Image 1: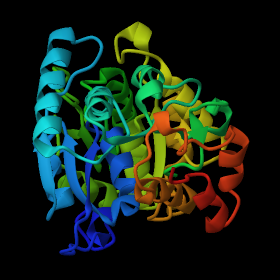
Image 2: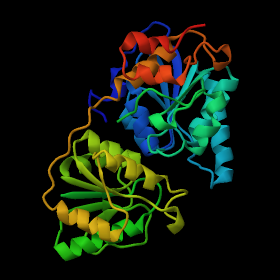
Image 3: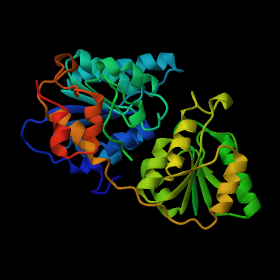
Length: 165
Length: 194
């Protein structure tokens, strides 16, 4: 992911004021899918937030932060993740928050929304029969709420416009 | 060369055992597996709990077949590099994942032929026997659906839109659907500045 074809590498650093975008994803497939929508962020000042320090080199040249990994079966850690995400939102004050899931992205959109950011949720392509738990719950806070499967799209959202594959 | 990966969600010994057995029976000594934090010690394949992202990519590059859990990270990386991939989904009832979404993912993505899937050890062995001389898979375009990228970018570029302004929502889901098949001008109309 470090060669020039990497989505993130398309982002040209310009001096002009660019919109601050926080791009958030858990590890594994969520992160890979976030990278695949990277070209959409090319005019933004992007800060990546994920759960694995080892991903840093994949987005070399960008601001990169990590938070605790957690999910519904690790409630205490969920709280920790929420606090870490909150502190990032407060410090970074992004204008846009985008996520491909899961728990850290949910918190980032929720808190980003509270702080006035525009929010984008792209539910993982892994969720083929129904939206993820975070994906369902984030709907009311997502200004752009997307699924990657046409048959999961509904009036009022989530919407389908394409997938990362 | 075959690369096996269970991803970052913990061990998946059912998969590793199945591959290890097959490697023993078929005398394959060219298999490397990323097995997660597992106590299981494969007898016929080399393994490591985790590999870094760059190393992961190198393993996929040199392999001519990937065997994985049905995680999107593994699937997307394999397809991006044009490799055949066989997945075995993790099952919630065996404590392999929190839910059964991997079964649905594997079923759906194998229906359109992009990946192969095996539900259990037996099926996996059959798939692997069929693939002893795997051909390369069609390489996934290095870029995501341009309609998706365009829709997100258009949304980002639009000024001051929040869902409570109502301006950013597409008029109807049908419109968003159509955006996927129509040129930029239409996709851009799905997101309007208020």
